[in-house]
Amino acid sequence: MKLQKPKGTLDIFGKAAETFAQINALAAATFGNYNFKQIETPIFESYELFSRSAGETSDIVTKEMYDFMDKGDRHIALRPEGTASVVRAYLENKLYAPEVQKPVKFWYSGPMFRYERPQSGRTREFHQIGVEIFGAKNPAVDAETIIMATDFFSTLGLSSLKIHLNSIGDAESRETYRQALVDFLTPYKNQLSEDSQRRLLENPLRILDSKEEQDKQILLSAPSILDYLNEASKKHFESVCEILNASGIQYKIDTSMVRGLDYYTNTVFEVVAIIDGKEMTVCGGGRYDKLVEYFDGPETPAFGFAIGLERLLMILEMEDIDLTDDMELHAYIAVLGAKANLEAAKLVSSLRMQGYSVDRDYLDRKLPAQYKSADAYKAELIITLGENEVLNQTAKIKNAQTRKEREVDLDDLYNDFSEIYEELVMGEIES
Image 1 (cartoon, rainbow, N blue to C red):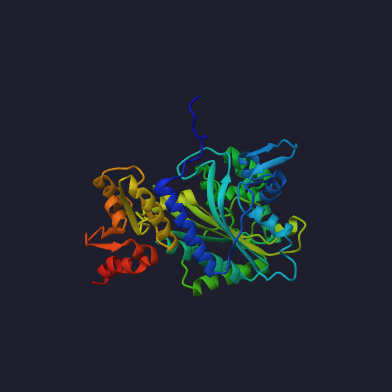
Image 2 (spheres, rainbow, N blue to C red):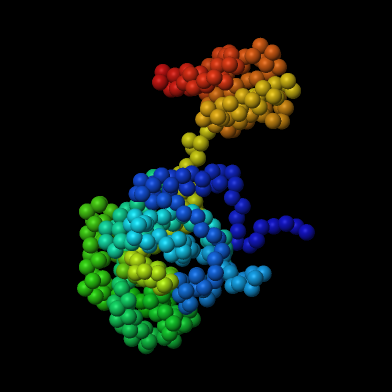
């Protein structure tokens, strides 16, 4: 039997894994500056959680959900997105209680699952970083969270991404617009794609997001949802735009954008990149003021977004941005002879406990091969430890770039490596 990974999944290792780790570290730092705290939720939940939150007519539920009956005859689904799980955690842990500081701000990172046709930048198991904020209806929350997304992308070195912004209004606004859209599209029903003909009856707003060319042509003259916003929704959207303008954030109002999940209200946005001449969404989200209440919780305004890591990785590669450039070893220990093995084990442990990134040779290779490994790992220093050095309780240590070398007592390495490191590395940089 030939063992292979399931279709639509990836093995993430080497440079890709390092990049994923770096992205998560930068997310933790950026979101932490905005006072967001990390949350972890299960990768599987009850089917009802996702089917109710996404909407029974959404593509996620009708086409893409990974669901099954477990051994306890419970209907389980692998999470297709992160928001519903965080809402469930917010409710189950009573984070709406008066004594909990509001707003409640979370960020998360992890795998999601959707059964769809694998393609470039889209897999059946994929990874997202997301944020959710509960308990504040102020339009400043919308704007600041969008600004936080742009801050994160700037931290990664990306500057070519574009923000698309829209409002889909509250329930009253959407119902008015829904009828106007149905009235407009009905004469074109037979010209619409098969999916859009179905959506005309079930969820007409989703037709606005169609990628089919025949639908796009018809929609060019469709009414704009912004013309159907009631006073409250219009005022909210104008305030969001005003704050973004005051903050110098560039955006494009895109009235065709509705997002793919039924729980959104008012502000929605996407961050897009141009991949092979086509727009690809790398981040999307918006406001969802009724979802907590929909799951029998108290009335709770909320806002969030999610970033697709696989797509983000593609964009970083296309932009020739390498987040692992600075990920190098402080020192590599070249080990010569069996009698040096124990001392090397002790030394590598001591240096790591002092806060330095260190590796060593384990393969009993000749010295040139070990030096090649040190170069491959971008080690700043090479420490050579042989049987004579162990006997004399010394070690040879040199700067891998300048080849400046000195012999030191092992006790100096064990007691305080920082002085030697600063002399051989930092001293060279300063000079």
